Length: 252
Image (cartoon, rainbow, N blue to C red; front, side, top):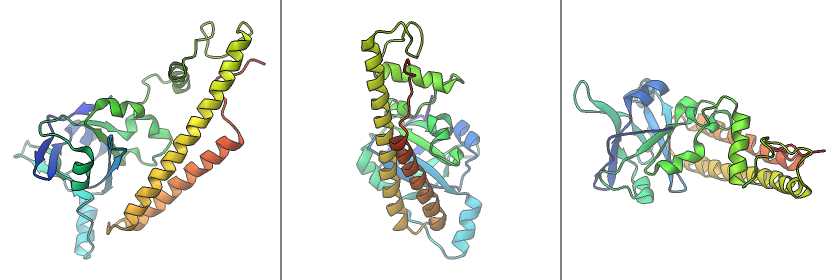
């Protein structure tokens, strides 16, 4: 699910870490690329490639600046065969996550998560990191190709549902009690998904405010993208309220 670096290092009020070369290669990230950092509930660090090193150099020549408190450049560690990473995790994240020297940091590319089809237009631009691998599991994508079936199996476990006579739907053989329970669970799932989208909207609006106050060279494009994502999630909330989703079929 994720790959860990060797170790996270603390250097005064900053922290440095390497990113596995395999992940960098898969995402197409290179030394000199500019990364943006945000924290999610003090559990997961959201890392996003904002622009390539070449584009950043063009911006610098034009006299534009970026907020070095939020954005960092992928740097090279060591000699010719060295590793790549970030030499100074933003100070505000150091205060929020309080990492220890020598602690492992774990990574999960967005392209390997269920967010792949739900939130991000370009999953190659986003990487999640955490000091606790368990915090990344909520984003993990089932390996089975039949995602809807895997989703049902996971939900059945979360809501303590029996596999109805070996099936994931109610059948004629189920009792009235089972039928009532599945109806209640469908309502709960729909409610929880609405809350999830509303939480995402809240997080995106906070990100929009942070970006609006920054001096990032791609500020306007990022704002447009965030506003589009906010609108998409708000529409999903409206749709689920109007047409509640039925995950587990109800026996007619």
